[in-house]
Image 1: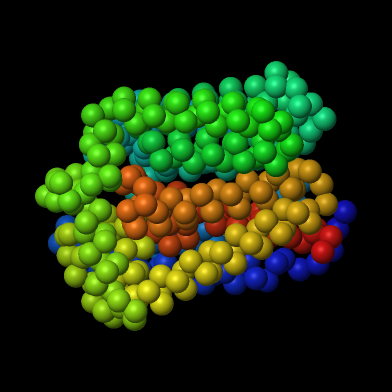
Image 2: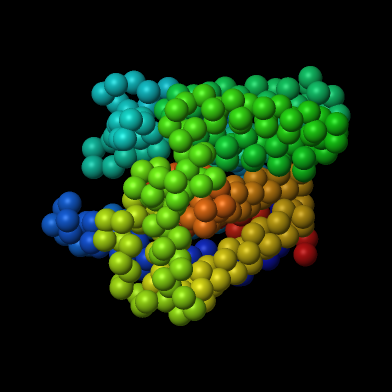
Amino acid sequence: MKYKRPPDFTVLICVLILLCFGIVMVFSSSSAWAYYVYKDSMYFLKKQLLWSLFGIIALVYFLNFDYRRIKKIAFPLLIISYVLLVLVLVPGIGVKINDARRWIGVGFFSVQPSEVSKLALIIYFSYFLEKRIDSIDNFFKGILPVLLIMASTCALVLIEPHLSATVVIAILTLMLLFVAGMRFTHILVLIAGGAVLAVKLALGKEYRVRRLTSFLNPWEDIRGKGYHIIQSLFALSSGGLLGVGLGHSKQKFFYLPEPQTDFIFAIIGEELGFIGAVFVIVVFAILIWRGFKIAINSPDAFGKFLATGITCQIAIQFLIHVAVVTASLPVTGMPLPFISYGGSSLVMTLAEAGILLNISRFTEA
C-alpha cells in the first residue's frame, strides 16, 4: 500500500517548534553552569545542536520508512534493549553519575539504554498485541506475556536505579493493554497491584522516603530535601505574567539542579512567565491530540498501537515533568520531551515523531 497523503503537518510543526524552542532554552538555562564548569557558556548548546542534527536525521529517515516494516525488527530490537540494559550495569562500560548507572559511554558520546528500551517495548508490544488481539480477554495468553516482558525490563531499569523511567514503562504498558481491549476487571487488578508495588518501592529506600516527605511539606527542610521544590516554585512565581526576560533567570545561577534538563520548565516559567509556560503546554496539547487522532485513523492494529504508544510516552513524560516542577509530584528526573538537554532522549523522541508522521501518511482521514 502506497502513501495516501503527506505527513500530518500539525504534528511536524509542533515538533519543530518544540525542538527550536528547546535549543534556545537549553542555552539560556545552562550558560551559567557551562561557563562555571567548562569555561564555555555554549558547551551544552553545542552538544544539543549536534544531537538535534542526529535527531532530525532519524526523524526524516523514519518519516520515509514504511512503519509496517518495523515489525521485522521488533524482536531483535527488544533483545538489543535487554543487552544494553545489562551492559549499563557492568563496571567499566556503564557510566556512574550521582550513584546511578544509566549511561553507556561510547567515546565522546553516551547512550541511555532506558530510552532505547521505551521505543523497543512500544514496537514489540504493538506487534505482539496485533497478533494476540483476539486473545486479549485471556489473561494468560494475551496479558501475562506482556506483563512479564514489562516486569523484566522494569527490574533492570530499577537496578540502575531509574525510578522515573520505570514508572513511564509501567504506565505505557497499561495504556497499550487498555487500548487493546483488556477486561475492566484485569485493569482494576493491575492498578491495585501497581499501587501496592509503587508504595513498596517508594518506602523501600531512605532517599525515596525523604523525597516523599519533602514533597508533602518542602518547607520543613528548606535547605535539604525541600530545597529543589522550593527553588522551582520561586522560579515559577517570580516569572509573573510575562517573565523576567529571556536569559535573565536568577534561579539558573546554581539554585536549581540541572536547570537544562529536569527543571527546564521552571526556567521557562521564570524567563517567559505564565504566557510562555502556557504556550509550551498548548503546543504539547495539540501534539498529543493529533497523535491520538493519527492512532484512531490508522489503517491497521499495528499502526494504532504504535501511534498510541508513542503519543502516550510523550504525554506521560510531559505531564510528569510539569507536575514535578510545579510541586504536584515528588522530585524525580524526567526530561521535557523535545526541549530538555539530553542526547539519547532527544534522538529517540525525534525518531518516534518520525514514525508517528509516517503512520499519518497512511491514515484514512
